[in-house]
Structure formats: structure tokens, C-alpha cells
Amino acid sequence: MSPRYEVELDEAEADVRASFSVADKYDLGRPPGAFQEVTFSLRISSPAPPGLVRQLVEHAERACHAAQSLRAAVPVSLRLVLNREGPA
Image (cartoon, rainbow, N blue to C red; front, side, top):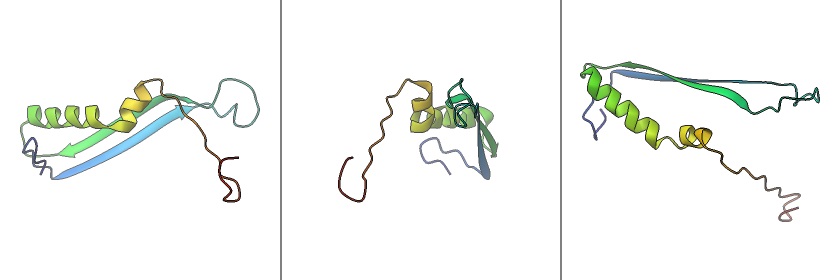
């Protein structure tokens, strides 16, 4: 049960798939190894009206940090701690 929308969920399954080139990973040149596409697929079984289920899914998508971060240009940094001695 989703308390915010009072949507009963009998079953929910998410499948996330991404496509990308491995060329850069193996030093074969371009393109870089960034995701080229990401697809979130949801399979939901619920006795609730379809409109309520869609509202719940739309809210969940807006609140999903992963999905929102993939939609925006987000700086990514790497912090290395080598031999437990702090940033290297």
C-alpha cells in the first residue's frame, strides 16, 4: 500500500537497462563509455484505478534521485584515498 496515494500494490517489478559503447573502455577510441540511453520499465499489478497508479508512478519518478541525475548534467568527481592516507 502506498500511503500517500492510497494505492494498493499486489506486485511491482522494475527493470533498468542502459546502452553504451565499450570502445573507450578498451582503448578503441570514441565514443566515451557514458550511457547513451537508459530505460526504466515498471510492471505493476494493482486493483487501484489506472489513473491513481499513474499518479503514484509519476510522483515516484519525480522523487527518484537516479532518474533525475541522469536527466541533468551533474558533475561527477572521484576521490581517491590511497593506503588510508587521505586524498592522493
